[in-house]
Amino acid sequence: MEFSSKLLQNAVNEMAQLPGIGKRTALRLVLHLLHQPASKTEHLSKALSILRADIKYCESCHNISDVDLCEICSNPHRDESIICVVEDIRDVMAIESTSSFKGLYHVLGGKISPMDGVGPHNLNISTLVEKVKSGKIRELIFALSSTMEGDTTNFYIYKQIQDQDIITTTIARGISVGDELEYADEITLGRSIVNRIPFESSLKS
Image (cartoon, rainbow, N blue to C red; front, side, top):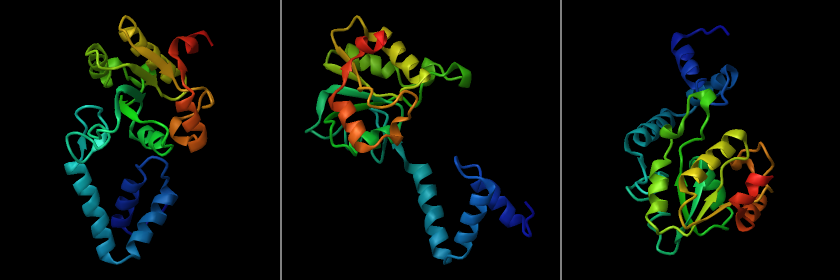
């Protein structure tokens, strides 16, 4: 792709580094920004800069937040004895959109994937185990994607806490094997949360 401007080329190259954005899409987005009033580009740039500088991670669940304790963890109407274990913020948003879950979350920040160099020490697993050992948790719901990496992560965590007096469940397999949680429709995902099954049962399937 030939560019008549180095400035344009640099902007397109940077935009193309975003996931799911190819060079042609990046060019279309950059040209769109060029045709907008300068104030709009400045607002976008400022919003991204502030996001990068000021964003926090909840000290309890590791969810993205504006403050030290996110709105979900600080909500007195949530059931603190039930923890839903998810991969990232997108999964929290997906489950919250179903209005079917009233407990708290624990965001791992990924899945165990040796091929990608991601081990248990790279994820927020130790803080989850500490929560369980505190004795305040009644049920742990595994809500990771139904992939080999998701199942491996579930099993690893299960082995870490299996001697604790706690119920372990997993979302019902209304979520197809191999599917990413964030792409499930709200009705299917909501039913999967409500109709969760004992985690031990999922090991036999």
